[in-house]
Image 1 (cartoon, rainbow, N blue to C red):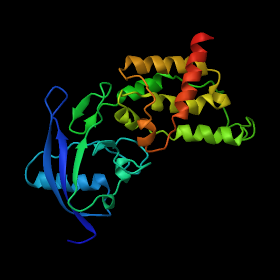
Image 2 (image 1 turned 60 degrees about the horizontal axis):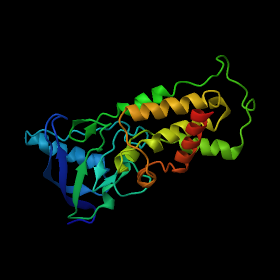
Image 3 (image 1 turned 135 degrees about the vertical axis):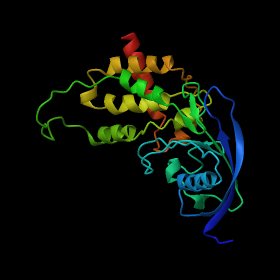
Length: 251
C-alpha cells in the first residue's frame, strides 16, 4: 500500500427526498490519492457507482475553492470535517489514515429540509439576507476613498464578519440548530460601518424575526458554531447582534 493513497470505508447517508426514509449505506473508496480533496474523493466513488449502474451520491458543490459555501456536510460528526477553518472542498484526504471509516451526513436542521442524500435546502439563509434590506447610499460616481474615514480596527473587524460565506456549518454544529452566528456576521459587517448605520435598528429586528420564522433554534452559547465555522467567525459577533437587537427593540 502506497503512503500516497488511502483505502477507506464510507458510510454515506442516502435519502431520495425529505418525504422518504433515509439510511446509511456503505461504500469502499480504494486507492484514493492523498492529494485529492474530499469532494474529488466523492467524485471517484460516484464514477465507480455509475460504472456499476448504481445511483451516484448527491452532494452540493460549486466553486470548490472555499468561497461559495455550498459543499457542506457532516463528516464523522463534524461540520466540514475535523480540520479547523476549512471547508469540505478544501479538506484533503491526507488528513485521513489508511483504513479509516468515514461517516458522511447532511446538515441536520428543521430550517434546512433535505432535498436528496447530502443536499439540503438552505434558502432560509437567503430569506434572512433579504429581510435585512439595503443600505442608504447615493448612486453616481465612485466616492473619493477618503470621503468616509473609517478606523483601521473597525474596518478589519467588519471585514472579518464579512468573511462569512453562508454555508450553514454553524447551524449544523449547534445543538439547537441556531443561525445566530450567521445572522450576527451579516449584521456586524454593516453595523460597524457608517454606510450601514442608518438602517441598523431596522435591519437587526427584521433579520432576527425572519430567523425565528424560518424555524431556527435559539442560541445557548454552546460555541460549537465558532469551532466549526470554516471562516473563523467569532461568537463576539453574536454579542454585537444582541446589543443591536435589544437597542432596536427598546429604544
